[in-house]
Length: 95
Image (cartoon, rainbow, N blue to C red; front, side):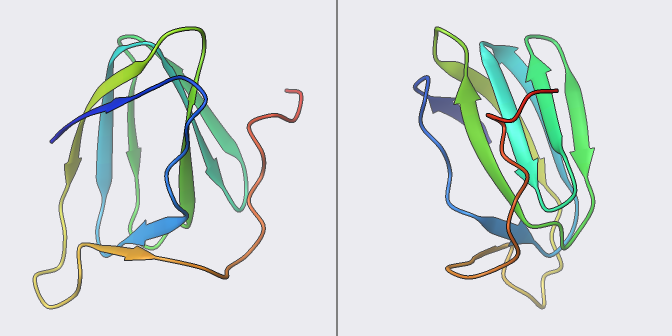
């Protein structure tokens, strides 16, 4: 799928039943997880394993455009949104 997210907006906290892969076409993104952040810019690729709690943040001065593939377990929902979960490492923290 392709995704356009204006700078400063975030996704909801969620997890996937199998892996998700990103390719950033333009702009910047940061993926918050319970253990670390993944900062990405144009041309970068990232694959996240199943079950990782995450929230995507569009960072930088322009919209983030990316391609994503979610390979999911057909016996489970591809995406599960979470209202409560572990605290995520913030993209706003230094480092």
